[in-house]
Length: 524
Image (cartoon, rainbow, N blue to C red; front, top):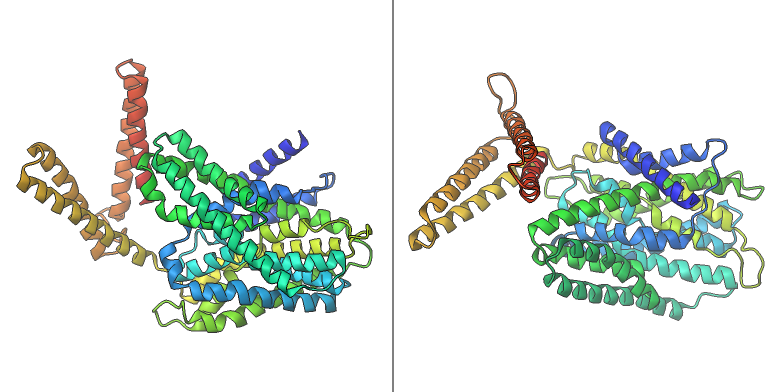
């Protein structure tokens, strides 16, 4: 009962914080972490202890799957080389540098210092995706940051298991076992993810029930994760591969009605889980600090040093790679490297890995340094989410890398024009063949011609810049007029229903059409 109440409290907290974040135009994860820390500091709030399997099994699969579905496989092919260099080279370098630094600055043993390095070596896909949703980054830069965070898990997980095995057993590093472990984790996870994606695609092609489709979509990431972990492979890699493959073919597996429902359901699930998990990160830090043994008072400076070294190393690593993803706009590699560096935050996955460190070593004695590793990991995560998260939009804007709204609007207008022209060409062919009723063809033609005219006007000027004699932007006035009409039609539909002139089925069908039109106006 206590756990259920805590989850509900975190959802309420997340909803409140997300409302403020949208109003103030700041990333919700950063505010959620701060809110979590603030709540944990209130006297009388019970200490929070989260089992690592709760985060790993319940929270991560759907969040990773949603992030992977957003990844463009087409754009991924253009940046796979720098992604591979980052997923292998930067992870190894980060683990080594942080391990050496921690062994010098902290009382951690050498083996536990490298456990800390392995935990913090990779960026977090959940945090990166959550922070990057509202940024106007060029496609290749966005794909690079997101793909790196999705695919560097196998490397960091192997490093973590190797380092943890040394710390717990007190043995030496077996390089052959480490290479074999990486092949099993990454290769096995990829194979399981591809198999799950193929099976789900076969099922979804034969399914037209929206409810069943929703259940399948929600169960897919959990199925991929559990199957991979049962095979001693990487469950995270399996979820990512399944998400990327199904995200590429999802529009061919379902119709528009099901896609709208799936998008709405997943938006709610992702929002709820992100609200809980980022608030948990903030709630954990004060609790872990209270449990630190004596003589660990220097942890804030140690965490700051680790975070700054990770950022500096990432800048140095990105400089030679940024030229391969630099947009063709005359921007310096240093600016691109700065943006990509600042977008690489740590998040939920390092926390889950640190929480999975066992309490005792093989000899039965308490594992030395575990509380400090947990505190340093959580502190670095909080630092990156708050400092980098709150300033990321400003860094992107000052770099000149952000895609201008007018450019995106003109691209959309050109696409709408091409779609309208394709539809008109098809109507011309049908007219020549006389294969459809004339009135239906004429009605469809008028609709497409109106859309073509609107697209041509939008292509010639920035949408929203043309103004009416009253000084109101024409696009805004048109959208407000359409929305007023939709609201009026909704009121009329309710009146018809109240007077028993339409059935419940008809009311729902017409209300859905009005809702879709209203949603389309909001999207525009």
